[in-house]
Image 1 (cartoon, one colour):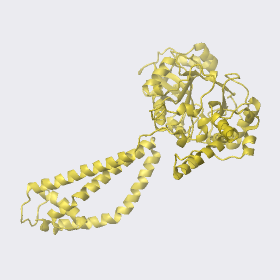
Image 2: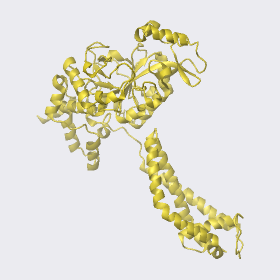
Image 3: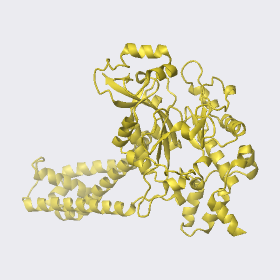
Image 4: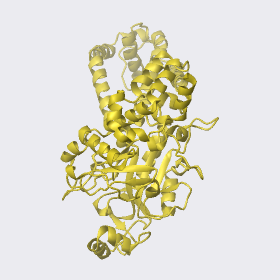
Length: 530
């Protein structure tokens, strides 16, 4: 029977088609690779997309290996050693057995036990190869461990030893107010996960109560907001309009609950995103970047209890940084990220600050108890200054507000110049000279436009050069036997701040250079050298 099947016209047809498919295999494979790359590039969560594609490819490979492992059995029953023909014969074999194809010349009846044998071999081969694939993947994936010596802190090894007041962070003003979230008059073009991946680590967000009104989020200011303070900040006309809409009393509520927390700007009718979505995105980022520290500055129109509930629901409450009680010195990024003995990470790497409500929890910091800042109501670049604003002076950290507020919506075209390295550098130097201190957060609109990250890295590089951390890390890496030469090259290529000369570092910092303090490790190294 097997010889009859292998010489049948049906097999000849399938065999001929297999030759055509074989010729198309390379173009189809290349087209598939292009589609996979595009899918991963367009995916919102690229890590999850790559992982899913990898699992699908592993299963597909297991299937191919399973069919390959069963080919010797097919060869026995089909009477041919040609792999392509075996596949075609196998298809005809199954079709004829199930009655889907009428046999032309059958001389020996097919026994059920043979069919069962072929099916059993194929199932066992598939299960076996899939198991081997999973085992190999599991063996190749090790449990992630926080390793600041390799990955650095917030991406750079020099930052681990710096106290917080000698670290500069890339900040995102009104980070949620993005066209990616369908906000009107947006101040960004990308999502918060994309901002995180690009290098932003300080996020300014506004938290409001809202409720869903048939697909539109309505602002609900009925709870947690002082009406007089709101009038002072937004104007009496805006408050009257909110009252007319029922937002201040909640009478316009038609669905949802009044205590849902949204991140909005001014009014949720102009754009809103559930706080849970953003907070979950931040949690996922911290779970995947074990030596990174993120800060959120909340302009809070909600109560501390509801902020706490939102953090807890997103799984972030256990990740909120709690300052050491009574500490007189700021911690280093390395101290915040260092895991405790026996643990693979330090979970508490999210700094949470609120601008309005009094602190009710040990983790809830008051923004302007920690920060002093600059003004933020500039209409032209030449109006930028560094005069004291909220927070006064004498605070441990400094926030530079760097964006324009001309008449009309924010303009991404102007952001290219506002966020250029020349303009940003000039502003940072202006604050260094006028305030006599290191700016710690440079907050901008349109983080995806301009040179925010390059400028922040350059200032951090200048600080590391003057404090001796650049030379310290270079010497430490050269003498280390913890890493292979390939790993050392990876650290040097990806986790070191950009190179800068002593002269350029001093010129960048100006009078701020004299304010810098050498980390204890650098002092100890210099003392031992003497």
